[in-house]
Length: 480
Image (tube, rainbow, N blue to C red; front, top):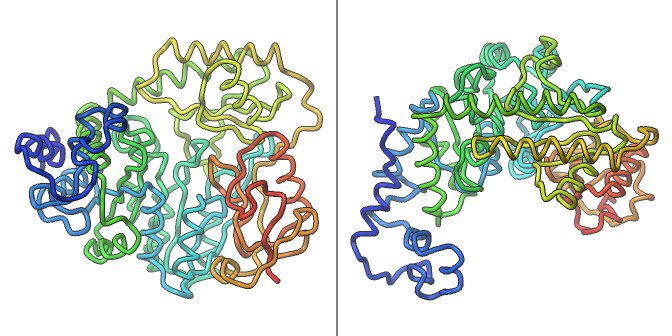
């Protein structure tokens, strides 16, 4: 048993600051003395601990002292056999777990509405995706979770697959039946990998959906910086007992920096301590605020802040009550239009807006008056900008037609064509709205008239389009 009051990396940095070491190493700002403008902006305390790896502070690539101890404490807090500190975001954690599970030619079963980081990993290792197209909620226009029955069918048809990857929860708060999927995977000799980017709070709160580690998953990628309170880009990679942690460290070191930021590492250490000691109280408050906001927004009329009523025992096995996801189509506005209006007219920045929905990410950093301001702004947007719903697209997810593996498509000979001329061609790059970073098109997928219409509509409504070589997304790279 470890003492969750400890924060070994933070404590080591505090000791280091008292040592008055003269720096003849990197970083070149030399504790801020060499860059006064940056020091004024970030503060001296920050610059004092933006330091390089050294014996008193350990080394993330091969931890043997304070980082090693901090990782063991974190593993215990999350109920994992091992935990790694990740400074490349959950992107690097997702990629590491796929690179661990799959080599060139190996199959991996996964929903198509994965984050681009998962498909990037397939490009890197040349694994073959077996996509499970998720069910969709036609009213909301969103992809749902992955049902056990869908996974069973994919496993039956691909018994040689090495792993199953599940998003849990989705951006919208929808969860799958991880316990049953875990048992199924292990009965077939497959690993269960979970992209748990939006589920940090599952480990530290009451009445949340089950966490990946508690459900028996083999590896989980957790964005501590999302709901856990650490600095942006800091995450945890959690491992169960079936995973060779020493080999996983080698996999992580293939892509993660050798110059880990101690600002990120200490933020993980401090935030883990906070959640381990006070998480239940913290997230009870978050859920209380989310439930209040849902009730008030639904009373406005037009908006639909959805919740546990979506649960159907299959593709929506459970729902994360801390997620404030709101469908906007009945007020005659696309989600991205409401997103823009909240920022431009009311100085409110929410997490994202897509074709039909918005997501306000709540944490204990929010105050009751902030929630009231959001509710009032949404009511005023309906009154000032609402219009008939006719003409709005609702479908967020379009089933892909896979023609080539992501790696082959990405590296094959290609040509750039105007968007209107690409129907029937195979895409060789990503097209996506960010956030959430789920591809509309991924390398190797067939471009259809429906997809072209969707891309044009998303651009027209103001979605932030990313992934393409052409910054304006007026042209796409396709296979020759």
